[in-house]
Amino acid sequence: MKRFQIQKLREAGVSVVRTSLASGASLRTVQRVSTDEPIDDPGKHDEKARVRMGRPSKVEPYRDRVKEWLKAEPELASIALLERARLRGYRGGKSAFYEFVGKLRLPKKRDGIVRFEAVPGEFCQHDFGQHLVRYADGTQERVRFFASRLKYSRMARVQLVEDERTETVCHGVVDAYMYFGGMPLLGVFDNPRTIVTERKGKHVRWQETFAWFTTECGFSPLATWPRRPQEKGSVENLVGFCKTSFFKAHRFQDRADLEEKLEQWHHWVNEERRSRATGDVPRSRMALEAERLQPLKIDPTGFTLRYSRVVRTDGFVDLDGRRYFAGFEHVGQAITVRVGKDDLYVHLGDEVITHPRRPANGKYSVLPSQREDLLTKDGARPYIKRQLLMDLCPAAEWFMTEVRHRRPERWEEEVDRIFELLERYGEFAVRDALVEVARRNVVGAEYVVAILDGQASEAVSR
Image 1 (cartoon, one colour):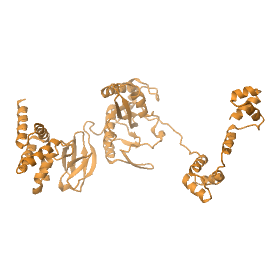
Image 2 (cartoon, helix red, strand yellow; image 1 turned 45 degrees about the vertical axis):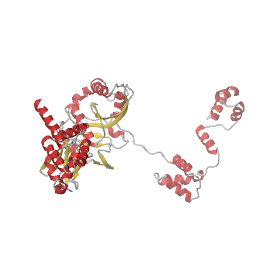
Image 3 (cartoon, rainbow, N blue to C red; image 1 turned 30 degrees about the vertical axis):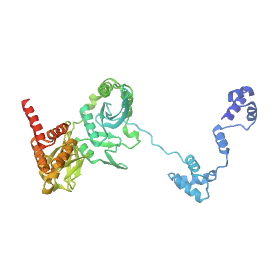
């Protein structure tokens, strides 16, 4: 390029000295280049000069042959081309060969991006995002959020979430549709792994629970192709928009301040700000879209999600790291489990067993009516009872250990007595009493009874 510059300056009548100053070349170089063959295409000239630099290329003799191979098979892997070249005598390095092939490959044809608009009530876009927030005191928190936006009106909803599980997606969708006042025909998702289990061509296999959820709600899910923005319509990058207009545009004192500002952001983005895509405030376009939205077919405040499970050999079913007792007579059976916010429902034919979703012991749930089913073997009864009590809390384990060693002749009676308290007071009360016994460092069922009776008396007096 510098040679071309020198020749053009000299052709324009610029002196040798001024050309030297302008180009940074020496006077002798300016004089020599001025008499060289004129350069018509500086790009080709520089490429020829580059090729001539250094040792002769070991790859260059294979240029025509590699071109033929690529013409016949454009997608042929570089490693396959290298093996063919080596069979024909190539002895150079693979890195140089791969670089050489990369320059000879024809650029891949890319589809054009064709943006499209939606009609009212047709699409809603959903996606997860996360952002590292630094609070005023210097602490940091990675905040995850589930964002939704109606494509026609651009009404947006952002919900802060803890994770990206299937259940979180479902609750996020319901929250958004309640906020919008109804649901559109299609929900567009950007291929989250929690709800898309397999994709072959146009066929999408949805995660089972999510598929049931969309059917019960009454809307159809649509998974976009990865890296295919034309399938997302003319909606701006939803997650990027949330980050730019909210997370990066504000400073937060703490989590509570962030949540308060998020509510203010909802008002600004939906009620005041004009959408860059439509030029209108989303609320004004919502007047047309609202009448096209359909009501949810489920109870938004108490809906449950459906899961398939097989009863284990110990009579339990697993869900989210916890176990729920179904019964030994159902071992090996495939059953349906429905999960709500606070309860879990095990469907056994016409019978439905309701468990607390978060058991008192944090590990598993056995209802009072099911305990006898666990105690079918006489020899194991005291040990099973003790295990059920020990699992209530660490204090219970300490208590049972002390009873076994301090009262070795009576430990079964002690266990039976405390186990009976479960029927009378419930797991939470017995657990709290065992914690208090451990705090006082006393051992014996009589102390547990005294504490529970005292609590009961206090409750009555209040």
